[in-house]
Image 1 (tube, rainbow, N blue to C red):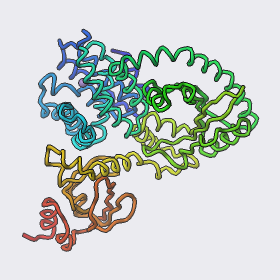
Image 2 (cartoon, rainbow, N blue to C red; image 1 turned 180 degrees about the vertical axis):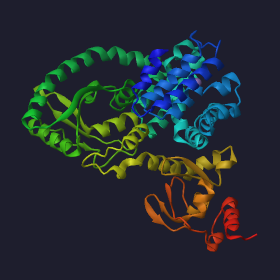
Image 3 (tube, rainbow, N blue to C red; image 1 turned 135 degrees about the vertical axis):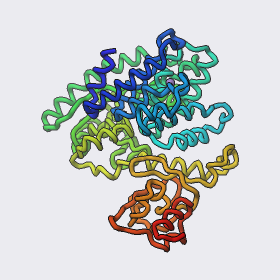
Image 4 (cartoon, protein in one colour; image 1 turned 45 degrees about the horizontal axis):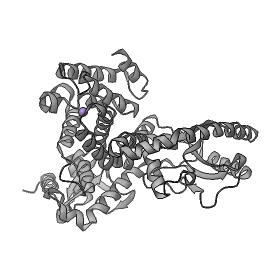
Amino acid sequence: MDNFFTEFKKNKSLKENDFDLIKKAYDFAEEAHSGQKRASGEPYFIHCLETALILNSLKLDAKTIAAGILHDVVDDCGILPVKIEKEFGKEIRFFVESVSKLGNIKYRGFEGKVENLRRMLLATAKDIRVIIIKLADRLHNMRTLEFLSEVKQKRISKETLEIYAPIASRLGIGKIKGELEDLAFPYLYPEEYKWLISMMPSRYEERLNYLKKVKPVIEREFKKERINYFEIDYRAKHYYSLYKKLEKFNMNFDEIYDLTALRIIVNDVSDCYRILGILHKFWKPLPGKIKDFIALPKPNGYQSIHTTVFCLDGQIVEFQIRTKKMHEEAEWGIAAHWAYSELDKPEKGVKLDSGKFSWVKQLGQWQVGISQSKEFLDSLRIDFFKNQIFVFTPKGEVIDLPEGSTPVDFAYKIHSDIGDKCAAAKVNNKIAKLNSKLKHGDRVEIMTQKNKKPSPSWLEFVKTSQARSRIKHALGIK
Ligand code: MN
């Protein structure tokens, strides 16, 4: 499995001792799964490695990758979580155990109430990395779905389309969302898929040949105007999203202008707008088709400028213009944020903080929307959500608290020391009073002060018994 490790060497966010951890997980899981086979006849362990490779391509950290290798040892090998903790520590145990828990939440019974299930998965996961491991696991299962029975193929594809692809989309991981949908499409809608495929090749090739003529024309102009760009490439629309779009336009291909698009990737934001100007100088834009997702990002954080123009020979072409960072975020979503925060390379002209946690905000709003719907509360089978809210740490960890909790409750939930030294709080980037009530989806940040002690007045508003007893303890009250 040498090429397995070569892949990891390409991941620059991994350090030398990270490879030791990955190697250890590798040996442990290989031993645990020995003799097990998948439906394809392959050794089961291959699935664990493929899952880890997907996580690696998302540039996740070593612990997440190691947990990816280990993700099935509890359910499929009967390894006890405590054993994982002994070998790999608390965090990896938490990841592996949580992924198993997610696997045990059954889709059956949630039909028609998929929002509930999505929410439940997020709440159970508690950490976004758990969800991402699950997505990687699902992606590899979808890639190898051909070996299962037709009944299973349909059930798993439906679940993928209704649950996992939307979660990937919410996390902004366009690449995984698109692949999951395209893998599920032929199993769920075989006739429609066949039709689409039969329509595609000639159109697709025709388009590519045409775009190949357009490319040098714009390259020449960019040179004249001294614009540096990383690359200009063609992007083909994913099948499933194309099909969805066709449905809106009576299956008429002529209405779809972005079957293929030219994507221009540049250094900074000002270049994006300069390029838009150059394109419009040459080719008339279609009215109503200029979309500035840089100034107004999509809810999941997507940024780019789209414009559709009457191009060479009067043909209609969509252009997408974005910076390299925007491009990576569009493909890798939350994972790209991690990669960037580690490398810490702010770009000129981009306010890093404004959009940085947009996915967290979005996730929060999503949960708010769901929790407010009466249908959701009515159909709830498990009570533990009812008086519970979910808020986020600045890193995106999900923290559950009883309704009416305050930043002080939050601080004590993170750590008793943070509670004791809690001096101020920010909720969604704004300073908030320590006694303010937190809401679903809030992002909470606690500022601590050395030598700070809890105030007796906190006892009047804290909600959790944990906070109450810690405050009393710190104040010496019995
Ligand atoms: Mn698995």
